[in-house]
Length: 209
Image (cartoon, rainbow, N blue to C red; front, side, top):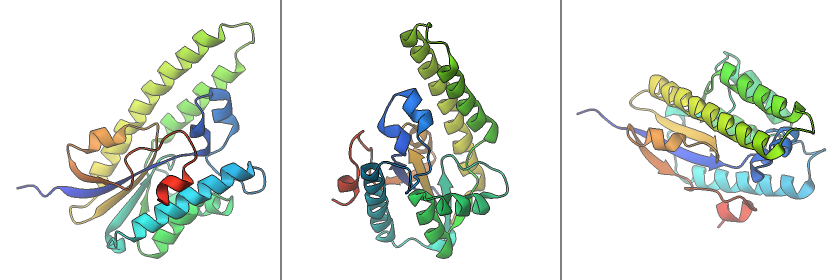
């Protein structure tokens, strides 16, 4: 009988995912800058990560057998260097990942770089469209193409996890709430959730409940 591998799925809220407005999506970065970002937003994001940290630490995972998969982290060979740079920029997400790496966990390259670039280019092109275009139609077109790209990203991430996680290891997966990767994973992994879904509102109190 094939042993089912264990996977911890953590849906997270990036700064830009508090809105469905594509323009705000691009204007905000996945990196929370403590100096330039809205103080309330920074407070909520850090409260969320404090709650995530507490819940994950309570799981008592065997850290030397944990592989971390983080959306937005490309397969590039420099994943640790990238994580360190983002943490220095003020990302609570990557600050926590570095803490887990110090405990023995391994950060795995997770996403296809070309797909990440295509998504960014799609959003940039949408915002560069002239004011005279039908904004509703343009937004609908963007949403359809963005969803299609997200499905491709999810499939790549799924293949990445299945291809790198050893049978005696635990996957710790951090994914933005727009992803539907968990639905792909449920057929091949024993999936447990730190929290099932995050609503589009203040999030700190949810994780600290």
